[in-house]
Image 1 (cartoon, rainbow, N blue to C red):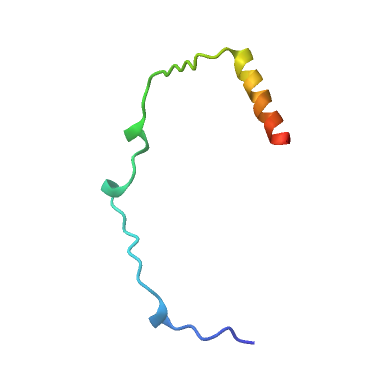
Image 2 (image 1 turned 30 degrees about the vertical axis):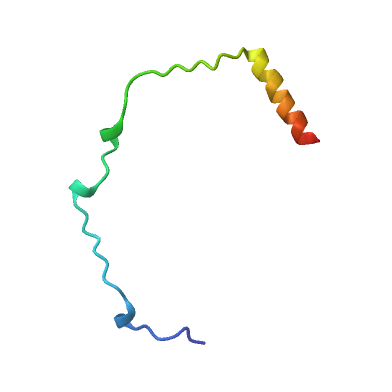
Length: 59
């Protein structure tokens, strides 16, 4: 049983010659520092809200 004949004319040339200038440099976008976030709610308030959301999903 055959799967068809191989025809080189159907193959496409692919330019796999990449320059280093085109490559992504992983250290190029690294950042050092910290971030702080305050949402104004206490842990208990957040846990209560989470419980409310879960109760709404059960209904």
